[in-house]
Length: 273
Image (tube, rainbow, N blue to C red; front, top):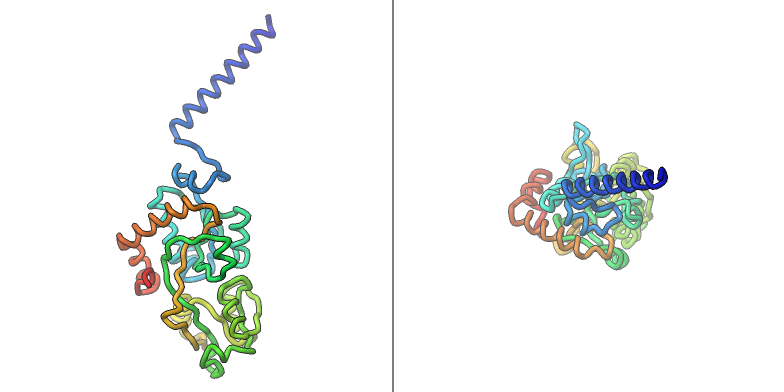
C-alpha cells in the first residue's frame, strides 16, 4: 500500500512538472536550441551568433566607450531588428573566422567577406551585398617603387594568411609576411619591416583620415570594374535563412537604412555599386 501511494505521488509530481513546463513554453513561445537550423531560430525570434573581428575599423571595431560598432556590425544589427531576432557577436581573429563558421561557433560572419575564390564559393553562401569596394596598396610616402600592380613583384607584403588580399598579393608575385589583421600589417609597414600591405580601400582611407602623420599613402587603387560586393556569410545548406536575410537587406536598402549607415561611417553611399 505504501509503495502504491509513493508511486501515485511520483506520477502526480511528474504530471504537475509537465503541466508547468507546458504553461511556461506557451507563455514564452517555442524554444529552439542553438543546434537547430538557423531558419528555425529566425522564424521563432531566437538568437543568431555572428563572427566578427572587432579590430577592423571602420567595419568592425570598438569605439571610445568600448562598444562594438562599425559599418558591418550596425548593418547586422539592422538586419536582426528587421528579422525580430537577437544577435550575439563573437569576436575572433580573421584567420580563425571561417574555421569558426565551419565548426558552428557562429551562424554568420560579418567582416567584409566577398567570396572571391571558387573554393569559398563552393563552401559558403553570401547574402545580398551591403557594401562595394576594392583593394588598394598602402606603402610609405618615401617609397617610390610602387607605381603599378606589376611593381609589387618581389616586394614583401604584410597580409592575413586567409584573406583575399593575400591571394591578390601572391598573384602579383609579392612575398608574404603573415599578420593577425590590418592594424599589425600597417605597423610593420611603418616600421619598414615590410614594403607594403594590400587591404580594403575604404578601410585604408579611414585609417589615413585618423592618422594624418602616419607617413603612409595609398599607392594603387583597383579599377571601378573590379569592385566587389561584401555580404553576410553562411555555411552552405542554410538557403532558407539566406533568403530571409536577403529580404531584410532589400528592405534596408529601400528604406534608406544602408545609405544612412554608409554616410555615417564613410561620408558616401557604399551600399550601391
